[in-house]
Length: 101
Image 1: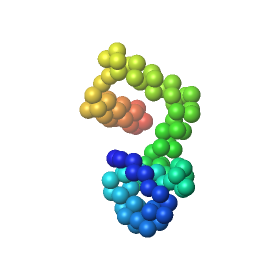
Image 2: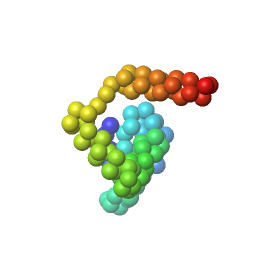
Image 3: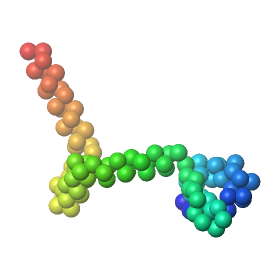
């Protein structure tokens, strides 16, 4: 992933190539107008990810959950994905058995 600075006149001429670069390689283009930063071109996928990150960081509840999860990982309070999935499946089975009886 790279950031390429291009003047707006060049961006107009190379727009199809620029779009291909952002879609396939996640390149970013900083477009300048009269020598000043004017716009950024990035993939839609990267843009959506950026918005989601901003939403998470703006939510105190979600940010607190991230901090707590990081703290738990640092303390070694983790389980493997296989263990989690196995426990989840066992819980579903117990719930189904209770529902039958």
